[in-house]
Length: 127
Image (cartoon, rainbow, N blue to C red; front, side, top):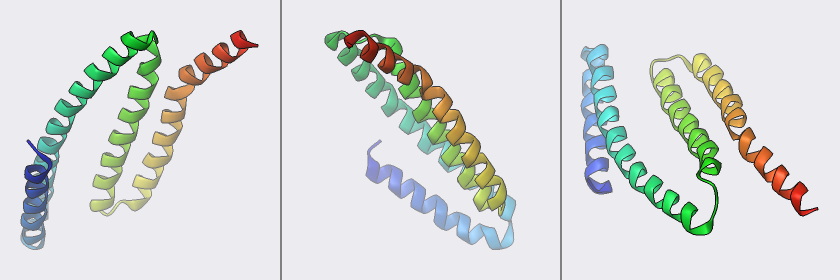
C-alpha cells in the first residue's frame, strides 16, 4: 500500500469514529484500534524491507549485526510507547499516558546502553 491509501484509511476511520463516538463510544474505539492495527501491519512490512537493507549495509561495511539490535529495540520501544500513550489520551487518561511515556523513555535509554558501551570500547581501543 502506498501512503495515500494509508492516509485515506486513517482519515476515513477517524471520520467514522467521530460520528460513532456520539452514539456508541466503544464501537468508535474498536474501529480506531482496527484501523490502527491495519496501518501498523503495513508499516511493519515496510520495516522488514528496511531491516534487510540495514543488514546488507552492515555486512558490506563490516559492522557487527549486534550493533543494530539496540537501534531496533529503541525504535520499537518508541513506536509502541507513542501508540499506547495516544490510545490512553484518546480514552481520557492523560496522566496514565504521561507515566507510560516516562517509562518508555527510561526503557529506550536502557535498550540503547549496549550501543553506548560498544562505542566506548571502540574509543578506548583507539586511545
